[in-house]
Image (cartoon, rainbow, N blue to C red; front, top):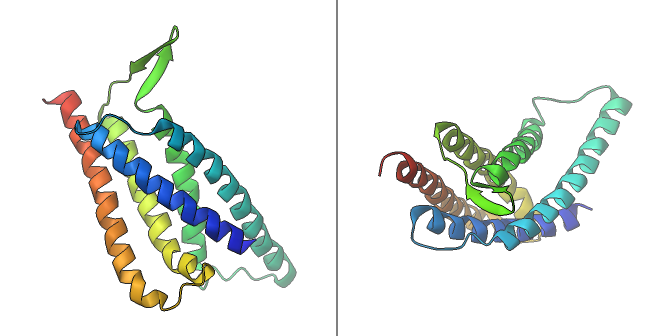
Length: 179
């Protein structure tokens, strides 16, 4: 089950990076597509990832029930991963409705105000915590040898990518409210 979740996670990460880059280009006015069909596929994969995550978390709770000890401090990273995943899900719902809505069959842009900007920055932050805290276990689950050698490079690239996406939200906010 963990191996399937790792493969699913890798696919989600790759598709998310493509969607995030295309969306950032659109928000800054450089590109013209956020690949919404890709985003819908990502949502389906995220739901699958969430179901597996709930199952694996259930195993932890069953072990806790058997032993009577949850080891909060020792499993701090485990809980950070679970809570950041929950935060991503909550912010993802806001993200999916932040930019447009349908009115009488026509798609309309939603005003991008400071609350939407804050929500999108929180999405990026929760994604950063979730993805960056799960890279090492992902590499291990995928059987990457010398994962430590790759880890710093991957973390640097992902951090730069996430910062670019966050900057695109700020530019989009400025385009709506200043320029």
